[in-house]
Image 1 (cartoon, rainbow over the protein chains, first blue to last red):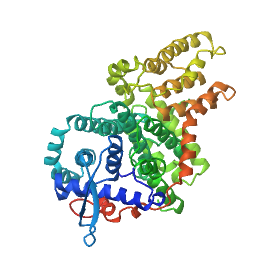
Image 2: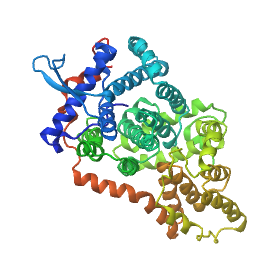
Image 3: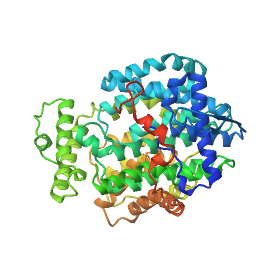
Image 4: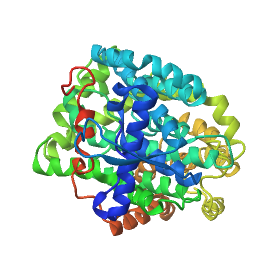
Length: 272
Length: 232
């Protein structure tokens, strides 16, 4: 369910590309520093977007650094971090933890339990620091799995539930922006959930497992997804985003479609 | 309506919810048009399977999540909608739709029988007052689901932010009564935002690259398991 909110690098200037990559590397760095090397592999692009978005809204500067990492051991590369990066790293760990636990309780994947065990201590620390976010993530994922178990046919029901999780993660602190931020995060979460369902439909049909879009003709998928993104943009426009505006809009108007376009291409080629 | 929905799914009428869902998924795997290259026969078959399954689930209203979900959240959602703010966002998410709502009062479903239309009068006043949950509850208890029912359900769902349901119901209303301009107007209204976005999005240029151009290393590790290093 994660890693959908990415940029379209083809439409970014070299500077913007660099800014985006270093944001991602900053998150990776913060994960390693705060939660241990093992947590680094749970990194996802959605949390990179969270950093860009909140840093822009709260006009946060950043500190630059250079490092070598496992993935790029030869070249050193630049990264940037700020207090939002730390927050996003914490949310990243909480999401990964609950996601593993969820896989364990739903599908009894032993591996997921082991992976969750690796994060249990880190997650506890995160939960103490961000009780609101973590209790919403935990409760909503349980609710979501109940909805899915009951084979709910109305896609709005599970999408609203998943939206709640993203909505809560976007509420970095309590202030004048909280309500609009939550609304924006919720709308984005709904889009992510439904897009994931659209992409997975064929596989879910074959595996005979739950998919909320099973009764919707796939010819309508694009229209529905456009509708959900339109909702998200409506909420986005209520927030004063200036810093990295082009980068953020690249993601919201173009990048979010990357995985969807990719899966459509595979279908055309007959890979799925 | 299908006279014997259980027969369509090939289960006995005393089958459990779980068995019915299992049978439905099995049939969906066989007949879903996406797995049959858009074959018309299987599409037709799938439609009747969907109808049968929905019919059984609607009949067993005590089962399924929707019902429980609405009951569980009743207190909260009622509280927030009374302030015309269904999600507690602190603003009306449908600002600018006021003209839509104002126009709403003028439309009377006079062609329907009196008894039904008095039911819809109540629904209408709930919607005008911003009590969308109450409107939906009232609608869900109605047995006769005609075009007008789908129209009102679409509007109530739209205000609650359930856009997928709203679109589906509004389209159903148009299908059942293609001559009613109001139904078409609602479909148009729901779709208009999506169209504006789609235009802006395609002006931007939809992504044509594959994802791994972004940062090859991490994405690969992401698909692999943390422990064994194999995809799982």
